[in-house]
Length: 130
Image (tube, rainbow, N blue to C red):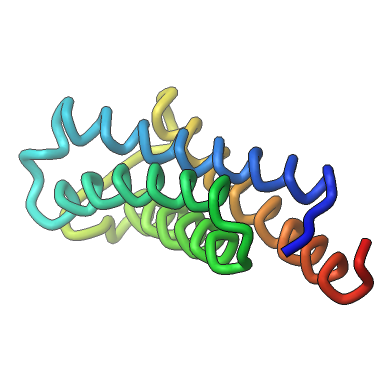
């Protein structure tokens, strides 16, 4: 697949976003979340998935890594929003405060927005050749 400089830059930004979220989740898992049932293992999976998706974005010029990054951002940010609701997520109640929460939330939102934009740009390139 042919890509432009803009498409490549978008992939780099999305990769940085999902890797950032993944590293934050791995840090939180190591600090305390490894003791929490259900959500703890999900933090570990999120951490590994963020890194794997980041690598795929930079090494595989296909729409699938962008779709994975968008799904990662939607699922992870969505789970955090549910965890901050009055219901919580599997007994975990989070708040919108702290560097880890904001770093993850912002990087996931950016992964969604820039990932969608990247798909549109790459689709245009595939269709028109530029």
